[in-house]
Length: 239
Image 1: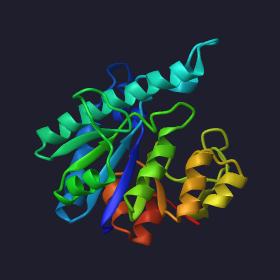
Image 2: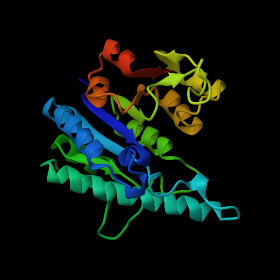
Image 3: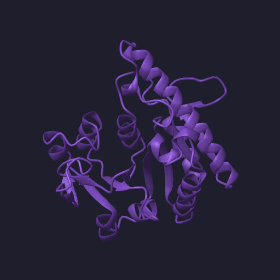
């Protein structure tokens, strides 16, 4: 079992098929159950949450200011983070929302020292509001936080079960990779992880695992560090 992991959850993952309701509590409860297993096994956990169940910056209307669109997206991640912490606390797990910008009494401003102290006490940190700046995705802040917190692994929970040599939703002959490098992802323009996040992970030599959240027990399997289990449900990404 890895000692410390950062898990990237998309907003769409929280909604499941209930996109009009924003949250699928069955899916979220399943995620929390797996997080409890990690905590019980001594693994420290931080989450980075997206906001796509409310708003995606790239989905803004024509002519809309890109900065404002991304700011709305950042606020969407905060709403998701607050909901997640409520669900975690209802399950008896301590949780704290941290953001790079001050949002009144709703969140705490990120501090590496404070985050590590909370995690050492078996609290889950939920990072929201991205980097606090436009033009960066939540994949990017996940890579940054994994580097800052010296995480053993960065787990990307996706709606596809790993990295393919082409988009499997558009090409039924796409082949899944068990292992791939960040350089290959960048050079082949594989958008499963954005370019900025891939570059940071490559530079900082961060181990990433891209996996499908739909697989039962997927988070626990990835956090086990067992290559056989990882290859069954996802793709290992290294330098």
